[in-house]
View 1: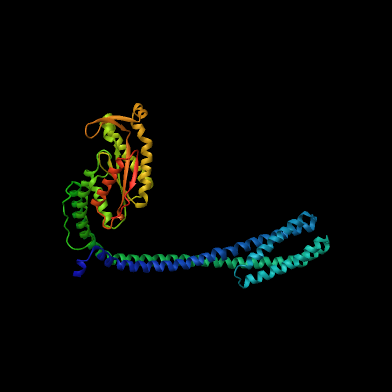
View 2: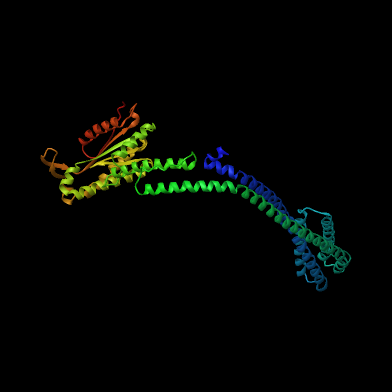
Length: 442
């Protein structure tokens, strides 16, 4: 009992409801067994008994219709009635075929024998009618057809009465079995629930205390007190959940730091998130590609067109990179904004070069729209270089340095950063927009 008090909530629930499960399984098993029996009997009723009853009714109507047509034909001798009689005979043959597929009892076997005799007599009548021998037809009808038809109708009446009694009896039995199954299933279920009630009450009280503690912790964390530590004794799920709250508080602090680290202009993750992503992939030994993206001659553009125009370009480039990575990268890729006109993409090695080329292609299409008509036609703008010397600069271009982590036996952020810096300096000395992959292995 002491061990039970210190068990986890799951164990308490399992112990408390094993009895419920046992009785419910007993109830369900019993109910399914009875349901299977009733389903089988219902299918028997629908597919055999009801069908046989309907066929008997249809056969009876057919015989009466044949009798009426036969009398009219022998009196008025209208050839059109021969075709109608032939249709009724074909219908009789179809009923006989359907009846032969249904399980036979003694009475139905007698019926099938009478139908065979009837069809034999009908063949004689059909031959007489075909020769228009009306006298012979009347003799066959009175001497053979009428007596056999009367016997058939009597047998059908007895058979249908027998079938009706059988169907009524089966329906009564099914109703009684259903009522019995319902009562026993309910009894088993109530016994299981009653036996588990004390255990359930103990678990509910324990959960209530734990929920109140966690509710207070939730309020503290929602108020910004990420250091709050909910305390619950024991080693059950709620104690583990309290530990989860503590971990969540730490995670929220980290997310707050990441939010503050995000670039305010583009909303993209900053250095902290980029460094964490690189370290995580290195730690997991997941090969990745590091794309360092830099705008060339951006300072000249910003000096000429102003801060707002420069900010707009930076935002649009961030959107451009996100769009390309979304189309050609994966859901796990990271697009970051280091600051200024420098961006980083962490992606799968296979997607690196397609992403780099697509960024260059789209940027090259968009960059003229950033400039005035005069500057676009000139293809250059005047401005001061980093040393304060006045000269002309071409329109903005974009450079992408690509480094693969698997080019290093022991990759690190420092090695990748240094390699990107070297490639970026080289690309800035080239004309136009370019990307370059660091192929040298270390």
